[in-house]
Amino acid sequence: MGQERALVVLTPYESRRLIAKAIAKLPFVEEAIRNSWIVIATGSSTGYVAEELMGSQLVKENFISGHITLGETWGTPKNPDYIFPIVLHKGQRQDMRAEEALKEFAAGDVFIKGANAVDAQFQTGVFMGNDIGGTIGAALGTLYARGSYLLVPVGLEKMVPSVVEAAKHTGIKSFSQHTGMPVGMMPMVNATVITEIQAFASLFKLSAYHIGSGGIAGSEGAVVLALEGEEANLEEAFRLVKAIKGEKSLLRPNGISQQ
Image 1: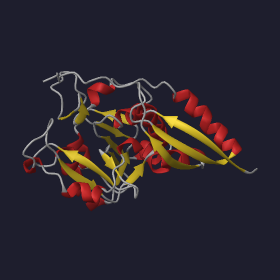
Image 2: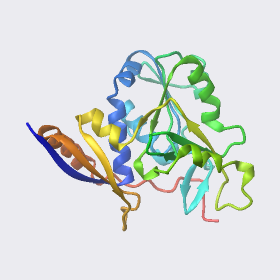
Image 3: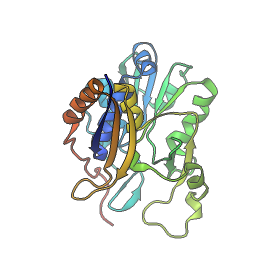
Image 4: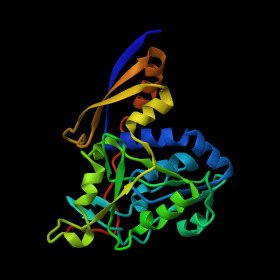
């Protein structure tokens, strides 16, 4: 069969669901679900991953720490229902903190952390509002030292020209004025990065090309993709796209208010 082409528009929330479904099917993630440890850090993207891996719904707004809302950068909300990073061992949720699970990590274990920026080379960076680096600052040394997987779900809505260059221009103490919380940025090297492009490739053996972004009236942050591949694969991909169409928007987390 010959090559066909299709055009797809995904809102940021539809993209998050697509990416999460692709992550759940990655061979090393499936292996970790059977035999190893997985830590899912808090975030607006990782909440979707948690749902796909656990097979149950999550109040994802309660799983958000640092985020951007109300036109500002925010830290972790003062939310009494806050859900801490999720720890899975052999697919079962554990009543323990991520720091304790990291002590057990070996080469086959998986740490899942979202990002605030991704560039055209698929390098990613995450904001840090904590003076000593927060979740990612505490985890990277262990992950790199032990050869564990660092898995980063991130939508193309977060595309920047260069993560390395961006990181040079951040730092909590370096900003004299700021709309919201000042941040530093940690580039996350040696990560497995899953955007919409990798998601379509891994799920359907399709080539995806980012050809446009943006929108209005609820499609702000949407990405436009050209998909190319075998007709049967495109049809299968379109069935999933139709199934995730209308993925509802996340709400403002509890514990923050307009200042």
